[in-house]
Length: 231
Image (tube, rainbow, N blue to C red; front, top):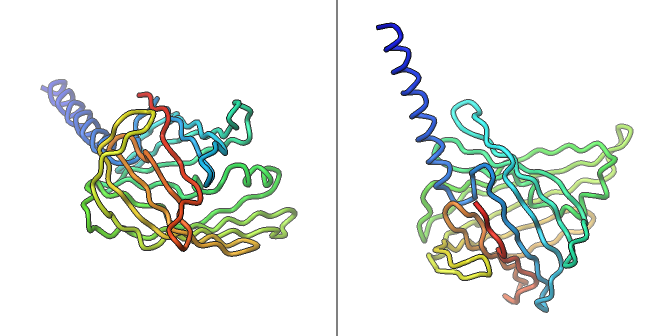
């Protein structure tokens, strides 16, 4: 009887973990160990500026949720390494939360690799269900680079006015995806302050499929497209 009770308990725990993991995997950012994808960045003239190679290296239980670690390598069009780094995605309370440190350009971050880095802020939240007309929570992150106890650089990134605009089908070199279109305003403060609007398309279980940065007149300044996706 004791062994039967223990077996039933283990089965219940395992099934709960499986359900929780399935909820995470059905969210909008990709959340499954082993998934790899390639995002190609273009300038306003449509020329390749860089390529992001990302892979979910691990997914581990963390309290009532799960955490994923994502590696990121940036190369040029010929495959030369420009920079590399990591960021995290967390699944909890029925939603996915993306570490905003992944939004900093790894090429600019490479210049701080020998410094003491301190980051604080909130993550970008993606609820399990995204519906046109829905408003999403803001996000922010502040990064301080120091050396010998002296702060040399402070960078702040604020994402506001996040809205689910529509449901659309998007085709890229990686395939055709049913997406939700999300718009947001991003303000970056460092030596200078820069503000721009971003429109992105996300697919369930895949993540970002396409993204465009727009100037004040609505012209595309740069764009990113999913060019490879492997489960």
